[in-house]
Length: 94
Ligand SMILES: [Zn+2]
Image (cartoon, rainbow, N blue to C red):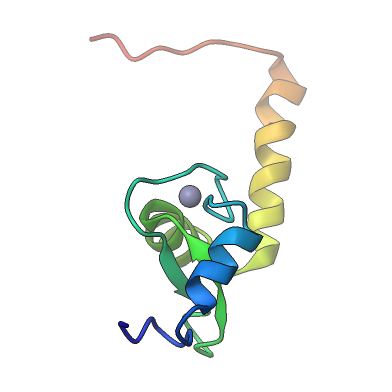
């Protein structure tokens, strides 16, 4: 058994089942093993995430900050520019 980043033998599988076999964030199943995600400040084990959610989203994008995550969700659902000018479409010319 590999030392799985703070999980004891069997706990990965238990957690995997608890999460329904999917990434805790994007809820997609992955063919590869999910990452064991930790708080990057305290090291506390949080759950299983795909590499993209763990590394790109939580660590880089959201900086482990739930406030930023809430703001991002609110922003996506109710963009301020749409509130101001309605749905105006912009496409980069290729
Ligand atoms: Zn994910």
